[in-house]
Each structure stands twice: as structure tokens, then as C-alpha cells.
Length: 318
Image (cartoon, rainbow, N blue to C red; front, side, top):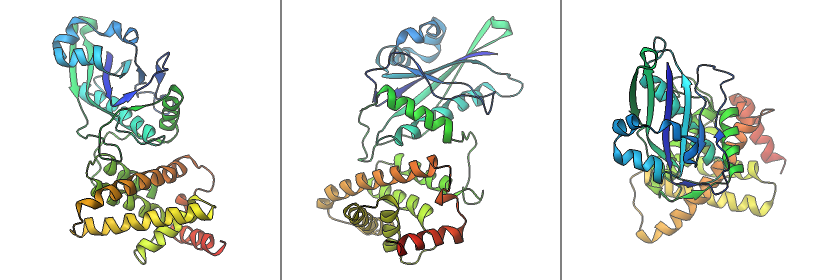
């Protein structure tokens, strides 16, 4: 069954995109659709017919064709006896969502998308049908805002490579990543997603700290000090940088403690909290890039005992 997928991306710009970028390949799973992104109406003009306009409505159609900064699109085929149209549409949305994590791996942003549309034909092309769906989350930058961020073509391609190399596309809801015995990197990734899907700065900082706990700790003793020390030693060999990272994470844990225990802080602390969230977001980005992109001797792949030995050795060899 022939199909066309269209979805507008928000809060993003690219000033040097000369041709559409392919986000993912389907070498591992040939049934997966191959998505592309573009900012040129000419790339999707053949898909913009009257039937689509009537199906999705004037407001959605005008945004898609006149206001959307980038558009994800895909022309492919699927077997309705194997997968339903709405499930196939969801696969497109999950791929697009994973691409957004690739964008975060490059720099802070609030890039998002809302409704995705699937146009497909039955009865040998004589009847056309339409489906729409969305992933019900809103992504925010580390300030808790939805501001525009400009990406270069090079950066978009880097995010696409990140998607191809690292992301496992998940289309099913997982009740608990811990019950599924998932890798610590997977669990940390879920905390990053929680941070990005939340506008509250206090809740963001709790998710960032939980992400780092998953990756660097094996118990809850001396939590704040041990984590701050390990992350600082892990990320830098420069003494001044290590001290800076250590202090930032200690402050992050101070805010985290107040948030999770229902304590409150004065409004004049918001400026400081905003700065700590920005710094912690960048620390998490550096750590997650290492976690996903290091193939040989990745410390986060080690078992509990060897993982603990690694950080003890790191501390002793200062």
C-alpha cells in the first residue's frame, strides 16, 4: 500500500539547507520508513493535493505549506495485513522523536512536532485515506522555554548520524525500564527525556541528577559528593574545570533536595537555579554523547563491580 507521511517541525530554523536530509536508513529493519527533512516546498509539492487539505483542515494545511520552518516527509509502502495505518504512522513519529534526541546531543533546544499525517491508498489507488496522530509531549529547552534555535546543515546531518548509529526506535509503551532489565544508559536516557519534556526548572534538575546517578553510581551512600566528584574526574583533566563541574553539581543537588522533599526556595533563587540547570544540561550532554558514541571500553557498559573499580581507580590516580 503506497503512503505519504508529512509532519511539521517547530522551534527550529536552518539557513543553509540546500537539499533534503535523510534522517535514517532501514538497513537493519527494511520495513521501517525512511524519513527526510526539508525547508523547501518544492520537495513536497506533489503530496499537497486537495484531498489532503480537506482531510487535515485549512489551519493545519496552511501551517504545513506556509509557516512550518522544517517539514519531515516520507514516501513508502506498507502491508496493511502486517501493520495498521495508524501503527505505521506511529513508526514515523517515533523515528522523528528519536531524531530530536539527536538534536539535543548537539545543543540545547526545544525543537518539537505536533500532528503527523499519513496519506495512503487502497483498492489499487482508487481510494485515498488519511490518518493523523501525535506523541503527546511538549519539549522545552533547559530554561523551560520553547524558543527557536538555528541548526546548520552540518548539525542536522550530525543529528541524523546520531540517530542511525545509536537510537533504538521504540513504538511500544514501556511500563518500567527497570523491570525490563534495561542498560543503565537506557535508563539515563529516559531521565533526559523527562527533563526535556518538563518546563519546571526544579523538576528538570531532579531528572538531570537522576540521569547522572544512573551512569555514575551503584549505591546511595554519600550521594551528592560522590557523584559530583566522579563526574568532574570523568569529564576533565583540567583542575579548574573539575572544580567548576564539582561545584555546579553540588549546587544542583542542593536544589534537587529541596524539590524532592517539598521544600521551597525564595524567588530570588530562580536566576541561580536557571544557571545551574543550563550548566547541568550541558554536563549531561557531554556524558550522554560519550555513553552513546564510545564503542570500545565504555565504562557505562561495565558490570557493577568493574564499574565501581573504574571510578575508584580514577580517584586514586589523580
